Image (cartoon, rainbow, N blue to C red; front, side):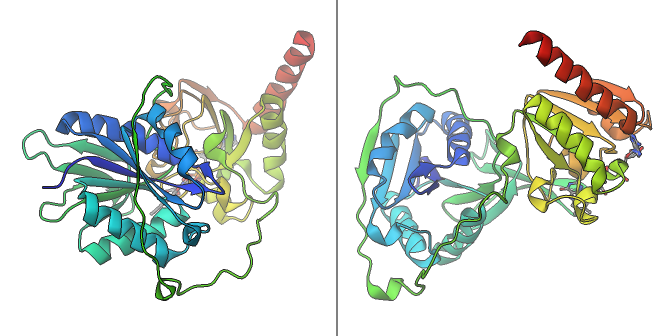
Length: 333
Ligand code: FAD
């Protein structure tokens, strides 16, 4: 009999990835609907001492596979470890972050244990009658939302992109149990040897962590057109982002793209300049706390999701706004 909602919590260099905590928050809702528990799975080398941190985010148990073989992520040993966890504990549901690692690991595990996997879910729920996991994701280029169920096989597995779900506020009073789950690795599991790891310095940016996002679309007009947006972002202590159109033009790096095929963001403030608000863009930012849109076209779809819709030319509005914020900060200093 399968039971409990499992979350594979990713760590890099011993640091827990935020998406793991977000998924624990969602797992709490699912587990409550099923009257089951939330279990985190932590894989790595020397990660045992990090396990207790996950209780505060909703896990009531943490299964730890701690082994030097798992120091760096490689597909085969991580797959073997997770398959062993699944065969031993028999989860009802298993959630993964749709990160580079999750996107590699989850399909491999699903194939190995012969179950289904729904990738990049934007909604997860429990059907009160069948008690099945309802996994919702955009389909056909984002034109429809499809809800998918996995009736026959267990665990029901899904990946969710960072920023889509919300972590609960950590509650240090929550406790739980850590279960060490040793796995016997052998040399045949090590089909890949990592010779060297080179971290990309200063190139990649995590816009999902930004509290303020200044985003520009095709209306920005050119690569240089993003410079005033960078100045505004600097004044606000935020990050610059873009629609896919801006990225496809080569005006800005792809890791700053917001939307269905970019990142999902949920900042406190999202400023959209010269972005029309296509459904694929809205999918990545509509849960922001406050949305301000500046567009020449009063009928652009972004205007109807904005808390403040400004009809105007961004080339006039952006520098004025930057100056006003800089002046305000000088007065406050
Ligand atoms: P446009 O739609 O061309 O809008 C430009 C806007 O700028 C207009 O509203 C115009 O009025 C305004 N404007 C022009 N000049 C000014 C000015 N001087 N001042 C103020 N306003 C001005 N898109 C994404 O963003 N993210 C995704 O992840 C994504 N994924 C996709 C996945 C699929 C499968 C598909 C099919 C599409 C995807 N798209 C995505 C593309 C999406 O459909 C739109 O084409 C794209 O978002 C449009 O970008 P935009 O709003 O910058 O450009």
